Image 1 (cartoon, rainbow, N blue to C red):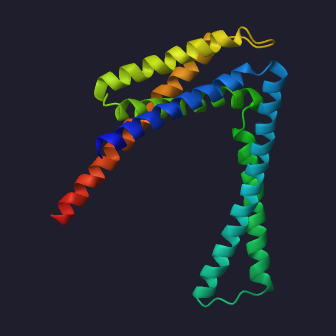
Image 2 (spheres, rainbow, N blue to C red; image 1 turned 135 degrees about the horizontal axis):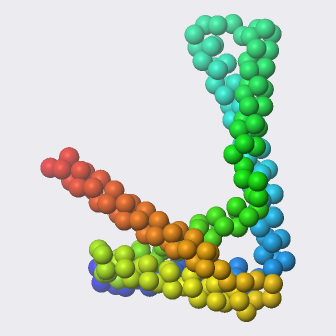
Image 3 (spheres, helix red, strand yellow; image 1 turned 180 degrees about the vertical axis):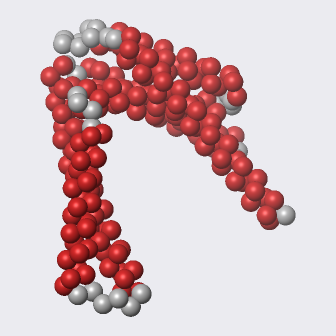
Length: 206
């Protein structure tokens, strides 16, 4: 990559960081009712997506079994089809029980807290990528990356103190920090994975 492309990549990487920070700021700017409405919308979509996925998986599983049986020369009659349908339906009912057992009692609260974790996980990845693009790597990049993300998490919670109906919480800063830390760790693992793959390709060609 030549100097011009490096500068372009560096600029785009930091622009992505700023845009993601702006998105976080936008979410924090929402008054309590707007924020809760958004959370409940996400909750409703998530539940429907899970239900649809369960049906699709069961239909796909039944279809897979039918195809496998046909390949083995088994004739699929009414009895076989009925058996497969009943088995798939029972598995579907079992999956509903598993879903209900795994869903937290306060799913809305769970989604809101996990949203904190997820958006800062993405921020951690973007910041680490931007630092690498700027030539900052290793322990120094990890330290600066955490400083940027945790500092922004503190400023985000302070900002929410000024929004009607919202409030800053130290526990949210901790969740945000863990998310950012994991994001940075994932970026490190991804870089190592791709660099190792490139080395293996070079060894194979040689």
